[in-house]
Length: 261
Length: 261
Image (tube, rainbow over all chains, first blue to last red; front, top):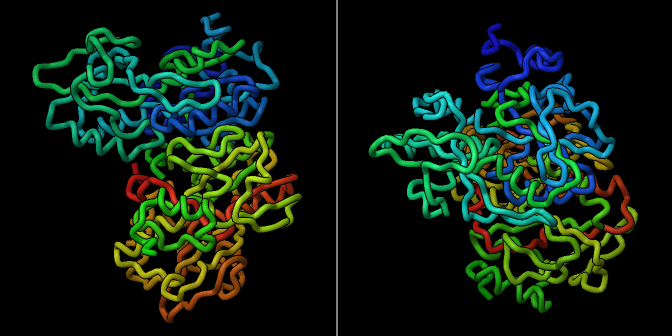
């Protein structure tokens, strides 16, 4: 199947029917993909406020109505309990299982947060001729815990997690400008250069994802990362949280370029 | 007193001490001013979600912690019950009084929403050489109810209110670009030209504010307006809502140019 050129609604249907259960990278070219955090309503106010106070790491694309499994704006004909290829359920902060369908676990008090994803800005970087190393090396982007505090909100607090892409020095400014135009998918870098300045001890040992090659003379460039949210939620150890499984995203009906406006 | 060149913290102190009770327009050049909506916590989730779904008319600069009269980010040493020159208290959707200090009415469950203000982008327009008619005519900006529906959230719903500035045709694109760079203070125009296209029957009879002169050949340009929020809140007729009195804003410690990043 040519997933690259398919329409989002058609790929979502294949996912819903269990015919796609793998990562969504490279599917539906040009369309934004979204991260997922589902929480009970009693935690939703503090969580929404956390995203408002930390828009760089937590750019919200849409928040569902309470209990609803559909969306109104970024995608039509969606079933939030089935349209991600893989979900993770966490209980009291511990991974309790991975599922391709979470209908059986749905609660009437669930609120779903759809969060912008770096796939969108990587597509813009590639279009602008900026290399993206983990795509070249066909692995996951390296991610690191930092010493940059998020702005707390109610029960939620913690440090920012960043993703890193090594760039030739003459591509750094272009990368900052291209991504700076896309604030709804993390926006501009949060740091350029010395990893120790933001509390990263060893650039070759990421906390999440895979290590990538950094060539002689290349500069590590760091962006705010949506994993920040999962980190912050797990600190609180809620009774139940459902997220997407890394790389297994919702493909929305919104094009990346539309997210600029 | 030379309020134009004073620091925000000093003007806030004069306001807190009751020495300034008038409009804040033209004070503390370059610093952003903020609108206010204070609601009980039980309405705050739906309201915060409404702002998330309607960022053009409702660009949130900061949300206070529950019950707190201070802020953490856009201004230090603030007393939200005293640092606006004038407040309005609405009970069940009806204006119940205007006060220069609302300490006596404070509730432990209050949440304060500070909203970006068009003063910021008007300053940028003037810097760019774009005329602002209501400033020239020393009156309030004309504002209109439209037929543009806001995206509802929980109990909150209603149509967008817009502000209008007439411009020579050769200044329209510049005005759109200048304000489009400032999404945290309403951003780009929502409509250019024919008022009837957005449900405005008579451009010379604004629903709020004052009518301004539109010269031969000038184009009316419409921006999303923070009065949208007050309109939407009043539809719900909450037991109590406190807002600033029009034009009587909080002067923040954040410069307008900082709001771009």
